[in-house]
Length: 360
Ligand SMILES: *Cc1c(COP(=O)(O)O)cnc(C)c1O
Image 1 (cartoon, rainbow, N blue to C red):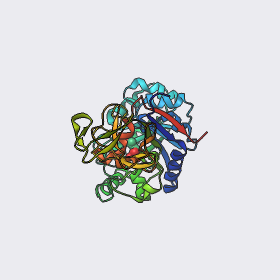
Image 2 (image 1 turned 30 degrees about the vertical axis):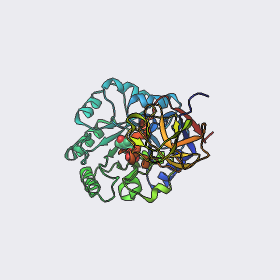
Image 3 (image 1 turned 45 degrees about the vertical axis):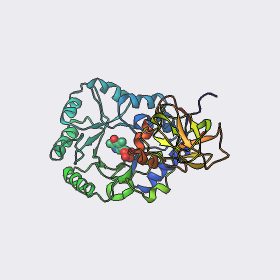
Image 4 (image 1 turned 90 degrees about the vertical axis):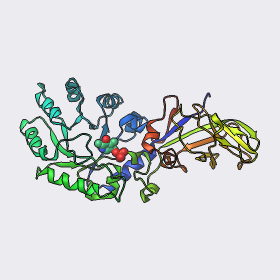
């Protein structure tokens, strides 16, 4: 065995979280969002472990094709639709669902000369202001699409800007604008990311789109009871490769950003920002050494991290160290790095071995 940096992926936890999302939105179908290689966890293996998924959501055709090549037969939704008209023949052949989010994209789709009848998710910009049709023009676009006979089914869709903050009234404003934009179109709806899904049936519509909660991270900006019901999917771990005694006043790591206040025992672990562990965590960010909490001291470097194990006299070379996972939530580490769990997960680099447990 060489370097021990491993992301252990718990497929049973992923299924548990999907089934929990379903149970929280029993009247809706659910798109399991596995874009960006399943938020860094490995999209194909996750999708293969979820035969009950109603649909998968990805960011682009390449991600969808990876799933098809892995034998995934369920519907797959391209969350931004096609970027070039040349993608349309492949989209049709692979029976993919598409988002249409602009007048230009709609015109391009209607001009496509070949036969096509994908399910089209017609996106309305209710305030996020990234992509989506103007609320006022939605009904006309919807009718145009319907009359063309080019869509197998039409779903009205929008995306919330601040559902992760239950106190933010903007989610309600967006919901009302969405309802008004439909003007009685009488079609299926899709609004909710993980946070909105957990927030209740009001925001769920006919199709929910959970992402981050499937990976076991709290979708809210603050503490929430859902955090105790979802299970972490990724455990990022490595091992201690060296231990040394440091005298009071001596510095550790680049620029000696930490100096031992008293004689200390410091462990060096084979993990670093080259693996995707955030360099900007503050001194004192916890890790689990043999299951016990110990603080990171000094700068995170590319391949190594130093941990104060003075309080763990039996810890030594070869012992396992967990950076996030069960018992150490990724969103807690994200907070220490002033980021979000999404970024930690998707930042795990190629040299970290991914290994799966569960679902055989
Ligand atoms: C990524 C994404 C989601 C999932 O959001 P989470 O916050 O991870 O639950 C849902 N809908 C769209 C359009 C997305 O791009």
